[in-house]
Image 1 (cartoon, helix red, strand yellow):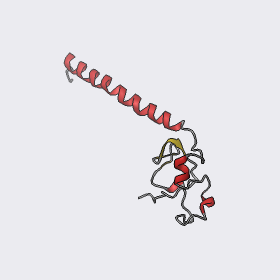
Image 2: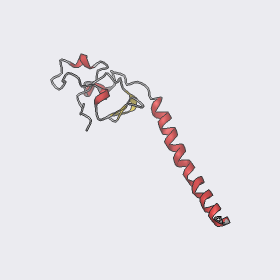
Image 3: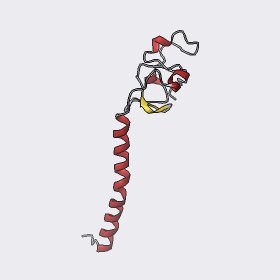
Image 4: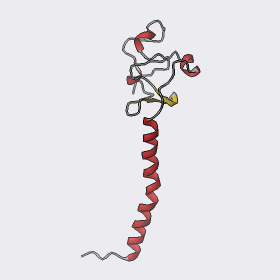
Length: 104
């Protein structure tokens, strides 16, 4: 039978307590990301990058190729529908912008 000391108990308890803020930070960041407002197509950065909510609407853009959407772009986060290029907003998975880059 293993003998556990009071010192071991306190050390493990303190490590567990110290990890709580980290776990809470991860959970709250995910919850925050999931509640991001949808990107407005009139947003200045969205306009600068030629963002459209429906990728087929970008067919006149020379940078667009059939099949490119936010959903298959490396900057897109499927869990939150967030985009690294628009960190304060979520984007349409079927959207597109000229910064589209294939996922590695």
